Image (tube, rainbow, N blue to C red):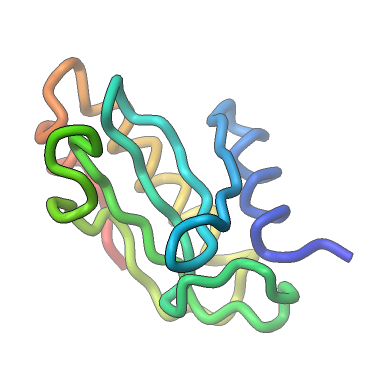
Length: 118
């Protein structure tokens, strides 16, 4: 049985984005590297990803520009939804992540102007 984390990782991989599941923080999340010290963290609104696909109730993706010096205190929401269809919601999430990654060009804040929120 595929859970939400596996579904998301497969969808990211299909478009050439490498993600990593991490359950060691306060909740479960998928991380995407966005620069030397930057990451995008993806989870649902309850910080869980170990749920069945029909239980999906939206994605939350946050961009952390500098996890070394600023830690997880400074972040920007790239994508937030309450779409109950993981099949509809995931492509929109991936578009927001792709836009953020493509907009960086050396300046973390430039990625934020490209991020989408639904």
